[in-house]
Length: 401
Image 1 (cartoon, rainbow, N blue to C red):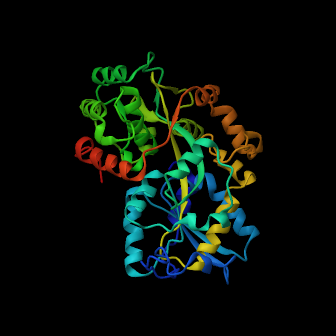
Image 2 (cartoon, rainbow, N blue to C red):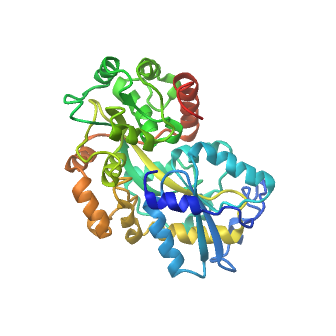
Image 3 (tube, rainbow, N blue to C red):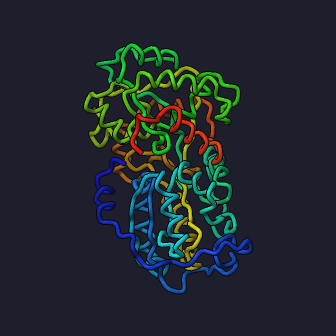
């Protein structure tokens, strides 16, 4: 994730802290070791909250969390931040749960880490605490993304995502208009198109999940039925040099001229240009038949934390979903627009956010958001199956694990 202030945080992060509690697989407690009714309104003592981010979400929400800690030192005394990749997340959580020492108190993740944890039964059921969290006034697409959590996490930021193509207009004066034109362009310009490994890239997985709509597969929600999409990806892969393991690397490659077109999203277009990773003059385009594949970030609580940590998390997440805090999600366009709840407009955001989006945003985005249909990301089992098949059949030998 490209933000330099978070890179510094990651280098300084401390994760070897005292355990928050011991896991219990008993069905009456949902693996928590206590019942939801036993979770206090606030911790008996302020907790140290260890947060792991596998989605670049802190770029949007660290200001929300830090302000909460400043204003509520009786709930959270201190926060430590660390980062990892989404494919690493489940292994880290399982190891701590297996040792009976769950040190990670809160996970910030996209649908990739969320899905892996749901499949492996790693998360507490936040739905058991719905009354404590209230009823967030989610935007309709964000509410649909909330359903993907299966009661095991809470949407905290949202955006329509992509898929979009981002390109250098000096090298690509006539960009592809359709998926077939993109394939023809890649064939004529080998090694000049790129997308990142979908299991660790929002634009990468959005590109995959958007293709069935562009190509006309019979069931875009079922990767097993993607006859056209998998065939397309295999053919396209003949002209792809390699698949980076992070989206940031694709943007760096676009910025240095190593490639000329990359898979992108609204936020991955705006933010790298604002940071100078990508030249300000690059362009974006949708493909004919475009359906937005919506994306979200989630706050997820691992099984095995203490009742006090759960209490602190509930208060924090409720705070993060208030309109005043949600306005911070505009950030520097990384997840544009960013807010998950209704009634949050850009003029409510910090001035820095307003200035960045005024300069690096694109007026066509708001029109496209209204124009093109919106589809939720795949549910957890289908998404995990999609990642596995791509890794085996498309990316094998062309990306670093």
